[in-house]
Image 1 (cartoon, rainbow, N blue to C red):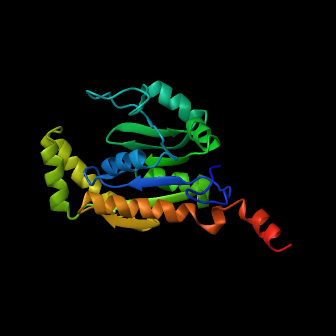
Image 2: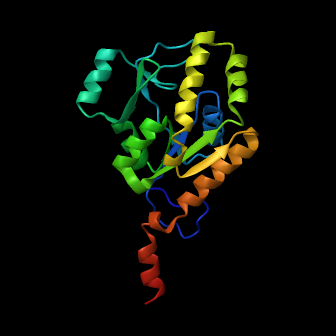
Image 3: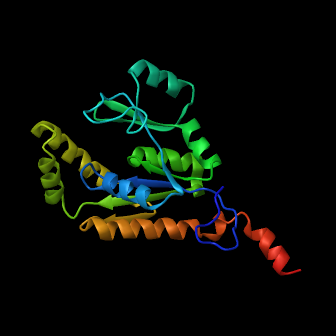
Length: 215
């Protein structure tokens, strides 16, 4: 696992599985992109999905696009760490990809919903850090979705209905932030990640250092 950033002692530590969740339009994808650009020790978990590819998306970068039959096979053979139904499509986190990133010394960033966060926590427990991002208000959230001009009104209405449900699960997260200013929210997320990397429980190399110190 990677050593703690800026740690001159190079303590080994367990990797962080860092989850960002929010209602669609609240800004988690923007925050995730900013975090990845700022932190070379962080890698993005790319989900598999049955939804159609949108213009500009790249298979293997934005998502692994698979058909329903392949998704069902992967689920049946326990190839996902977590998976869920979202808007009549299925999304899942490939297990092998995450294990490879952790083995390479990376922390892993997840852009998943509350169902996925719950499943991941059940599997990986203390290595999972869950952050929920609120919009400033539901009115602002609707305006953001409408400004995108990518969805029909009925799709926006469905996203708003789902948002109410997602917000109700805020208490299943370790941290909550309000994205009323994207830079401030980004700094909050970055601070959380830095603090979690420094937790004593993750410093697997600390015991050896203490033993040398107290000889």
